[in-house]
Amino acid sequence: MKKIALAFVAMFTAFSTFSQGVVKQSTSGFDVDQTNIPHGRVDSASYKSTTVGTARKITIYTPPGYVSTKKYPVLYLLHGIGGDEKEWLNGGKPQVILDNLYANKRVEPMIVVMPNGRAMEDDRATGNIMAPDKVQAFATFEKDLLNDLIPFIEKNYPVYTDREHRAIAGLSMGGGQSLNFGLGNLDKFAWVGGFSSAPNTKAPAELLPDPAKAKEKLKLLFISCGDKDGLLRFSERTHTYLSENGVPHIYYIEPGVHDFKVWKNGLYMFSQLLFKAVDTTTFSQYKYAANEPG
Ligand code: FER
Image 1 (cartoon, rainbow, N blue to C red):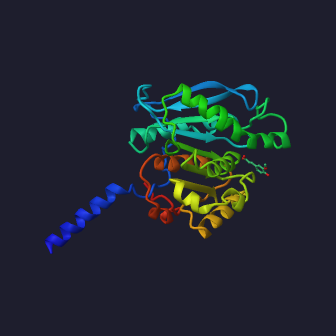
Image 2: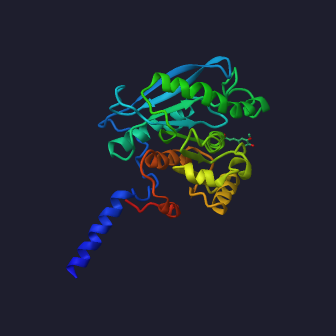
Image 3: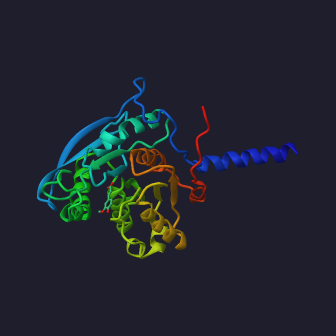
């Protein structure tokens, strides 16, 4: 009996080292700045865009302990329709969320690039942010990202340049962009996340005409949304299509509306899964459950 019990313990230990288990939703304090831990760095930079014909701004977060002699994977993190390259920083405090996760050794060191996803000459979020030319600029950003920004990052920062070390995620319009660009360029991205994705998300059959290819190439596809978000149907229809076509993905619906509470939790959960071994058999276990008190 003892031997059998020991064998079970050994087996369980072996399995648990291979899979990292289900990442839980954020708990209180996850977005609170801690003074007694190492901090990453937030910088601004700009790159020359041949797509737009201007110098375009980015915000960039490098992790605690960052050294230019190492190589890092990259997460491109995209904003919403009212935002710009500072939206995540101002509204989502990704540097605080990630500093805290690093302090608990919960994320792989990575560089986070927060661009301006409105690829047009005047890319400020002013005037009518819903104007057709401004909405179109969110689609144009695909070219700017692939042809201008990614080459700029790879030339100027110590990063890996293969698809398995490149992730894309975003909120709302940026979620739609991430799904469109990520799934549309599987040779460039292996990790894709859409938080509360907007109506710019392509219709499923156009978004993913070849589900078998996605199944083969994707490391992680993460879709989250608040249950009271007016845009929920865009995540829902994508999820339904993915399920019908057997494309593994995490579908995480949590209590919430169209705001940073949901997007911060999206970043919190998605970032912990990145650039690690992924166990797709755990994906079905991603269900919202209220945190236990205390
Ligand atoms: C729309 C509703 C919402 C839309 C875009 C949004 C382009 C984007 C919201 C956001 O980014 O927060 O009809 O059309």
